[in-house]
Image (cartoon, rainbow over all chains, first blue to last red; front, side, top):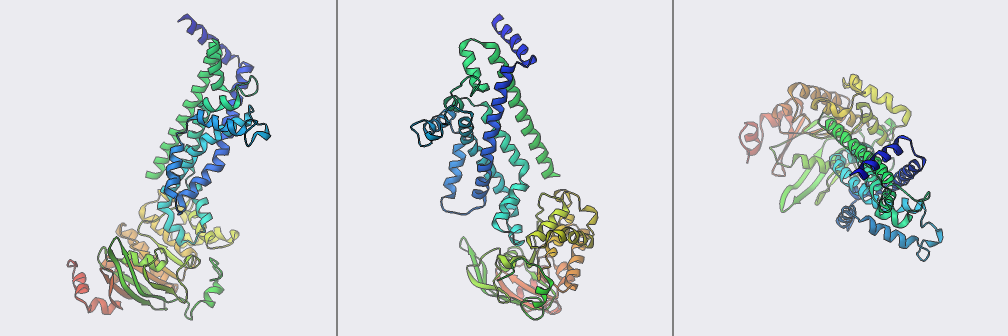
Length: 235
Length: 257
């Protein structure tokens, strides 16, 4: 009990003193996860929109696959990306293993299905409403996709936040492809895992507090935006 | 098939057909879904002169579906639709204004809803806003141009939809029960816009089951029942002396089954 109390006090000290090591870890975490979400958005949003609007054989299979991939286990993603990036792997020549770039790749793989699936759902709903009107206005297929993405942007932002929440909180993928190297690839989740096993509870707890604060903020933002959206629709 | 979406008054004049308004011609149009025949051998020719043609009939007669086929939104199983020499494909679509029963408002301002249509029609950027403004002003919507279109009342939304449909200077304006869910005052406003459109020389095709509206607006009536065209006649003739029993019953307010 006194252990926990001490750890908690030390954690707060670290937070309040803006400990440079702790700050660096938080910064790298945000950098990696935001980078992953950016990459995932660039791939996932157009992909989801095209699947929503497109009519092609095997479309249902793609939809099912995208939804299933939302629940991809991070460790498995880490393993696959590890195999691809390792020396003997097909992308080994780039020497990316155990770098922040590798972590961005792994998290992007994890987040892309989430963003693609949510985009697909949102755009498809809007498409149901807009289709005839846009066709009657003589809008080209590409423009339709752009219009749908633009008009669906509040819901899409929610998808981005959900993706970020997933990325920043996962540990399995980044620990495998990043290796948890001090000052290089150490992020909040991997540090918490390591420091806890080493018995250094104050740093782990300090990071835990920050991580929870970030996730709570993200879901609060999601809720706030859903609420605003709902009002806009009913208004 | 050239000049997709280009709105140019000279093209209007060069037109497809002498008389400006391309005549609509449906021949042998048939459509079935799930074993039910929805449109049965519809042959229909609409005059090239401007005027209001009302497609009249009970619910489920196939009126709205016929309008969608005519606009090229639904592909018929059989038969063909021609606007002048051309089918109603996408490149023609910009020349047909369409107003749906439930207005579809893009999640943008009222002004942006109209400029969007102008952009889709290929109107150059620097002309769009001024044109949209004057159109909205003409529709008595000028004071709402900055408002988000989704928060307007149903009547206002439908007026925006109508102005937006007219923005691309269509050769024909198709309306699918545009006032079905509107109050009398909004209905009046829509009908006034329809009259102004006809006065401007645009051919109007209006689907309705509202007899009063048909009497107020129609120059010509096409009566549809169970997917078939039973009558096509000038409005006065149709309302005074319908030639089929089904039309007589419909006019008497009886149930047409």
